[in-house]
Image (tube, rainbow, N blue to C red; front, top):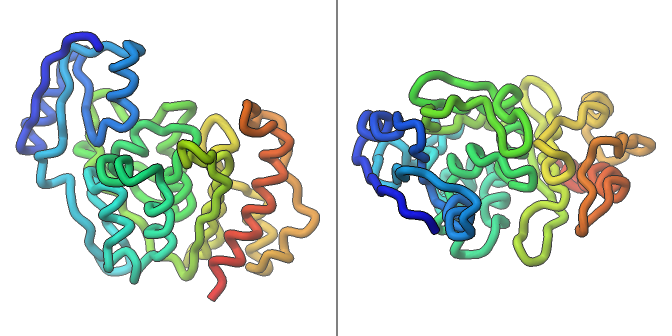
Length: 264
């Protein structure tokens, strides 16, 4: 690990000032950043730890929207009575992330800002049509994830919270990698007041919506509506865990399972 300065601001304004350096980096839970530093894959002049910024924490229901602060750990989301009542699919998703260390240190904001192709939270963000609130603006879920480890965030922009519309029903299913519990393929299915949303993670360089399934399910929200539906394997990930053809098949099957789990 290379040397770096360490800052721990106690307000959002302080954090914004300290990240202004060209070689400074925000630190949330550190579940991806710290290992990359230890392996000397990245080097920064300073890390700005967001852990003491109170504006970035907490869970609350605001009408028909679930608001989760960016620095809220996965374990807190999984255990929250508010989340379990309003959006049980979110609590189940959070409970399935990593191991106890990752769940107690990793955060919602850190996960989506990192935009790992196999992370779970991006599926919920896109699957629910969430809004990402930063210190500068609000970003729609469909515009947030732009590529492999890439988002619409500006370099000095800080994610403050994510606003999740509460759906009529929803569920998340995934085929997980046994050691890391990352998604080889993960599918978040939601029936919302604005229509059906199906978001897929793990299968491609970035989370995406399964539009064919959305169209079919908008007619009948039941697993049988997906009979005969196929996903083109071109452009999907292919690695030691699964080929692109396998992932294409898994997306369809996991979508059926997610829809079945979402039904009352």
